[in-house]
Structure formats: C-alpha cells, structure tokens
Image (cartoon, rainbow, N blue to C red):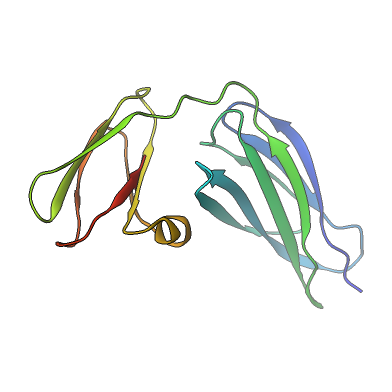
Length: 163
C-alpha cells in the first residue's frame, strides 16, 4: 500500500506559504502533484497546480492574498503508481484587502468599460458571465494591474461582473 505524502507547513506570511513534502515509505518517489485551492469572493473557487520533480521537496508559493484560507492537496507519483491524496489547511497572515468598488458601463453593444478602486501594484482578476451559475462554474476572466479594462462581450446579453 502506498501511503499519502506528508505535507508540513514550514512558514506562511501575508502573501506566501512555504511547505515541505515527504513520504514515510521506502517506495521510490519520482515527484508530486500539488493543488492549492482558495475561494474568490464566495462565488469562484480558484486553483493553482504545481508539478514537482524529485523525492523530497520544500516549496514556496507566492503572490497570495492576506488573511485568506488556502487548502493544499498533494499526491506522490511513485514506481508503484500514484499515492492517495493528503490535505492541509492554512490561513495567510495579515489583513485581507478591502474589496474593490466596481463600476461597469456599456460603451457599445459589444464592449463594457470596467473601472474600480483599490490598492496599486497588485493584479486584479475580472470575472464575467451571463448568469450566477456560469459566474460560479466557468466565468470568462482576464487579469490586469491597472484600475480599468475594456471587456468584449456578446451582443444582446446581460452580464454580471466581479473584480
């Protein structure tokens, strides 16, 4: 039986998490697959996947959001097959940034100008869809470091926007 890997949180800060991965077995490990999950604005679950080569590993994941719960899951790729999943949860330190205040204005039938307030020197994600279900499951999205963007949409549709 292949055991799940051990995920140990080494440290965390406002914008990063460091963790180690190891196996408690003599089975040869060729690497790990790690998923980091978090929820965006209670509507959208986000995921970042890391493919890690080798047996033992310490990883640092940066560019995270302060005071946000993250779930890290991992499994090992071994000579006998894939291991079961293991999970850990961690909340980054600091104060979560205030939600931006979004304004969306139609320019014409296929373009919407989105603008918002918020801190500078961060990356914003803009999510949009024609229903709450689509906004939750598979929204259109783009990112920008500025405080405005023009989004191209389908004509004769109403859209919901999040930033």
